[in-house]
Length: 101
Image (cartoon, rainbow, N blue to C red; front, side, top):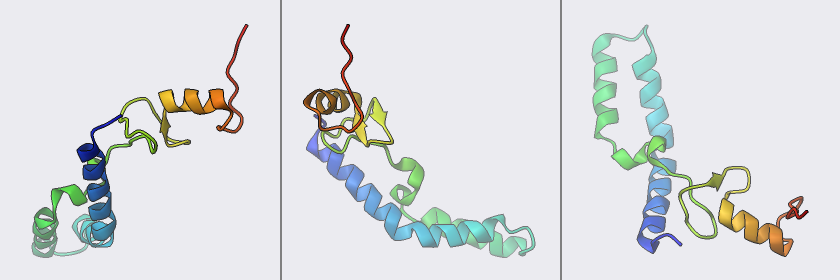
């Protein structure tokens, strides 16, 4: 299981991403608009740089919902491979059957 501090840090980052998503999108739209004057685009890029770093969606890391494990993460199920195996073995993951031969 992941450290609780790491799990909480990811939750904090997710909250920041949600909070600043509209503002970041608006500033990026101004920056990428070629028809706007260069000064306005530059001011928008400075404002974007002043926003918290953790408000960027690229700083988020996928983690298992059950254990917080950051590696071997299945996006569709939002769990790690280890938890997928345990859930499949206990019959709690729909459509997952442990093979045996």
